[in-house]
Amino acid sequence: MISFNNVSMRYPNSAHLFRQVSFSIEKGDFVLVTGQSGAGKSTLLKLMAGIEPPSSGHILINEQDISQLHPNAIPYLRRRFGLVFQDHKLLYDRNSFDNVALPLSIQGITGEDAARRVRAALDKVGLLNKEKAMPITLSGGEQQRLAIARAVVSRPSIVIADEPTGGLDKTASLEIMQLLKAFNDVGVTVIIAMHDVAQVSTIAYRTLHIEQQTISAMPAQAGIL
Amino acid sequence: MKNWLNQHILAIQLVLQRLQTHWLNTLTICMVIGITVTLPGLLFVGLDNLQDASRSIKQDAQISVFLKPALNGNVIQRLINDIQPLPQVKEVRFVPKEDAIKQLGQQFSQKDLLADLPQNPLPDALFITLADTHPATAKPVQAQLQSRAEVDEVVIDSVWIERLNSMLLLGKRIALIFATLLGIAMITVISNTVRMQVLTHEAEIEVSRLIGATHSFIRRPFLYMGSAYGLGGGLVAVALMFAIVWSLKQPVQLLANNYQSDFQLVFHLVNIGGLILLSSAMIGWIAAFIALTQKR
Image (tube, rainbow over all chains, first blue to last red):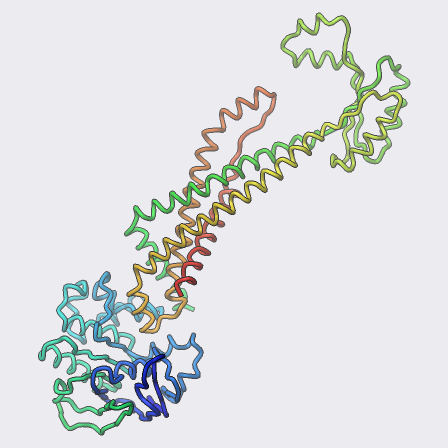
């Protein structure tokens, strides 16, 4: 599904984050990207979503080399992903409903069809009763759940979450991870960048560990919900 | 196709919502643009009216041929017979000096003054209507007539119209320069406003980009916003111009009546109004486009 072939990445005037890394992620995987702060976890996710181009190498999404894509095609690539950010990136001048509806608007889906899908997504994350609420009135955990609803509303096959539990307490963190696991259980590939693996000790997962410019892929861990 | 249409509808709805939310700001910008457009617009309306007036006068343009005194009827008739077949000539009308003084008496309020004159000072005259009033046609006829011994003076009545047309052309050029300068000012105003809007919605733009919005999707509301400001300003301008022309209509008509003219001040709402609305909306779009291009 996602394949990195000899991918290197460095930002201008800085050292390599990774050199010549190769790995693949299969459909339905639940993958944790781990590593120390600054190791390049977020960058790895950005490479997967086509937000950053690699310095060299090839990234294939469903057999399609994204470095060969025309810049105009990149937005359409990003629509295949549901993105969840550590800082939520919610729009604070719009209510919960409108925040979740944004990806659908981008795809030109409006009206009843959009409303039905937005409510289904809000229902999935337990915020159906807060569709009119402004994000600022929601707790940190609720805001992250709202961000997850926005990520899944367009039914992506891959959800990429960057530190989704950052700044949340243990209970809220566990809720978020359980939610992401629930999407994974219905076939969605979930990729999460995380520095504190202890929060997911109860979930079965594969790990991509970034250390010293290399990425080591580890098989699924045994912890089960 | 449906999704594409939906995106345009969404963008328009979003723009209308933003304009409504910041209605005072919207009104202020539209007023500024409206007044900016009104100034050259009024100049164009004035020139347009003068042009109409000159066109109606032009149809009656003719050459006046004043004959030497004491010519007998046969000489005059021979002259008319010589002029009539000329290809440039459409019609020849002879006005004896007796008729001329009568006509003058009808138009002149101080009839006693005319009665006190010892003799009729007016000459016999021929009024020649040309097939074409262009100076290139009139000049050779004038030269030909002037060379005749029976003719005292030849006056081309359309000369002043040509002068007026030249002045109108100059006026239009000045109005165009004026409109261009104010158009640039309008682009600056709208461009800055749209740039501010882009800054205000930077978070939304960033999120939209990350979750798959195309350039077109992001730019569309701002382009519509620019057009909406232009269109709003254009509407204000048309309303202002309509009101100004309406308020001047009666005084202008009274003035024209004093000069025995049926001239009326007219504002061509469909032509000029439509042109103003269209060009304002276009300028707004261009201004937004410039703002977005600079932003990229």
